[in-house]
Length: 89
Image (cartoon, rainbow, N blue to C red; front, side, top):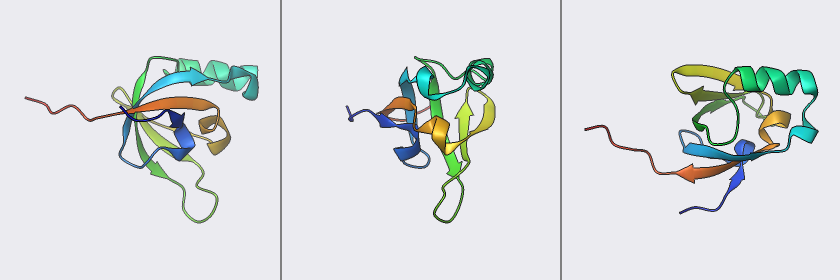
């Protein structure tokens, strides 16, 4: 099993599970939006894309069947545990 990291540091096309969120680093309104999009502890996701150049902002994620974008500042507040991709039978 790999070491937990923050979402912004997760490799592209890597599957992970959210293991913690520093809600204090995110405003209440933004936290409500993230929860409404399915971002919470225990949720599985995949990091698909990130912005180009030095900013690496925004970051595109696959959560369930949805693709959403989060700001790098939010991704830094989300701790994830990388997991191996499951192979469909």
